[in-house]
Length: 425
Image (cartoon, rainbow, N blue to C red; front, top):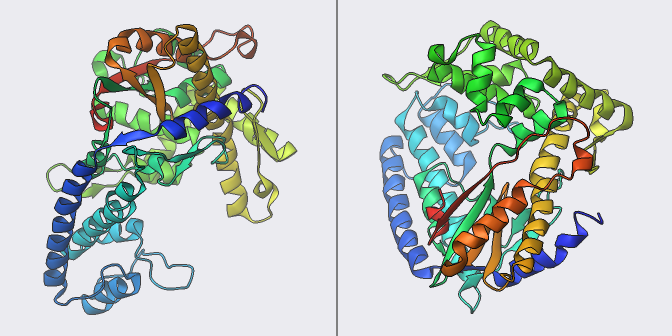
């Protein structure tokens, strides 16, 4: 509270007051384009289903798909009220059965972008032409930031349409937006907190961690490594941080056949073998994750590296699935809380102090905090100097007393700059 949260209160206030410049004309152009696309998709849905209906109504979608078109309900979950679910995750199971399903999914994605961002953000822009979103300091259970009015943390980046929205956030003339992004921060913290020597050594030597893990789990050298092996290692690397079990691993390991576009499932036994092999090769990680679970069961909470607690009342539940869910969240809390809450916040303060010391505070302003990334608006003349100062501050945030006698894991910050948020790749 005293060393991490309180010192950044004025920084957040400043970030909200400063806001980020918005290109309203660009939003207008996107709005016209996306509304036109929506009308076209709507027309296509009506043609494929043979009638007009309210595409925003789950009840009417259900009637069209399962009664009029007679699609199979096999394997489709029900909603809390007992109706057949038409959530995205359920509709995706039906895409092979009828072309209208893909169009409905497309329509939903686009409709959400339009209603949540494209038609909403321009109305929130202040008289100064800048958007002043709220950043909620302890907006999530792990201590990470959340934001609202609007929620800038959730702008989708997987699709091109989602990424286009970021192009509307711009730097003022004579300045640039510069982002500082912690690279693989959660895996680095997992290595540090589990003290796993292979992970630590791989990070210290600057190796690609997914390749390094794939080589060990599949027992191959670099020459024998395939893309598929690396892909699988990446899935399990991130999966274990979220307490992923064998069934979830199996789902995530499934691939798409390039020729047919159809899903190729991985067998349960294959997923189980891969899972077991991973923990056999990394016993320190296995022991660390088990120790978090046992600690949470005993005390009812977990702690980050810096002592932030998160409580889990469900961990002692007599109901197995509630208990299992609490265990999964407990495994993730110390790692995510240390990485994207504590470290990002300490880094924020360290960077501000370093900029003040260099007399650059009025030339370099923090404008956004998104997950494990900080974004500044920087006067072009001071770009190189400020990058050096901020990068160094962010990479040296963990005080020695939290490392002890162990070898530390280097934190790496990647930097990108451009005229718009969308340019920061």
